[in-house]
Length: 439
Image 1 (cartoon, rainbow, N blue to C red):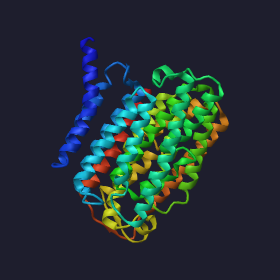
Image 2: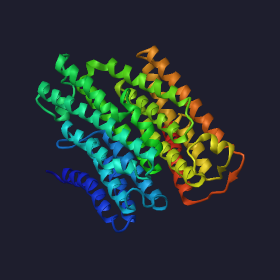
Image 3: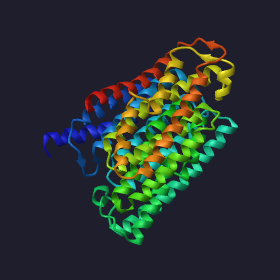
């Protein structure tokens, strides 16, 4: 092993080690979560400049972008949590401990080269986040947590059956050995169908996505942010890996993703709760990104995933401030009673533009590249995607505009508003830079 390989492997193991250390130290000192996640941000950026990895780990361009997403969003949410999180269903210190281990599990989903270990990491993320979803207690919260645990566990169980079938068909679970080897046989077809159904439950794909709006609405803003920004997109990448194993099923994957984003967009048109509105927006964005990967437009898909992560984090974190200060989750209550002043209302506005693909945000650049590619493949699919994007754009921005024109404006200039604003601005900066590079 040469020096370059040794450095690369060392960085990967450090990436997994820091969240564990940070989690345990947070039991006594909560700032450890911020420092350890910041260290992972630095490592994930360093890994961008190293060659791809194939071995125990499988790290390609997709994985590298998702490493930056996970480390960055964890850093932002942990920083936000310092002033936001109080004792809930468990003591505050256990929140940081569970969150950091959950973040570590997501690294496994993104980087491991074994479909069985990826499944185990995804299942671990579910087990670690059940308490986080229920953190704020309450009858409705507990019901949402129960739905999250049951539906996602069922999906992951179906995914496990899919893995067994893949093993019988291909005699390996090493991802790089499986990619492209799927044959048009009943066994592989069944494995693929169960794979997209099982892993798709966590990836926001119909019909298993019903847990997501409930969990996002009731979970703390920080947990909702990480779910939308990283967990759901990471599970979508696992679905893409299933597609790579059996690419002959392309139209099945495309059709289900297109139906998912269309139904999610239609549901957005009738939402009364702002966090629930953003949750359905996640379903729309992630399925758009998945379609981009399937039609071989990775640049557009990764731009969409990356900038959506920061934009949606800004949206949920600013929503958290609204809920804390105004004690409501309803759009109508904010409109008819009281809203918040800058910087939080500015963060909410910019975040809504970011997640709906408004130029020059990075989501616009990513969606544009995907639309251009799809136009060369299928006009009916393009029509569904454009209609869905239009419905989502109107639904989110109309409702957010209502929240920005309240009868009374309550002054709020706390640090939480600035953190959410910074996250939204990152989405804008990436878009401006991407437009300059593409031109």
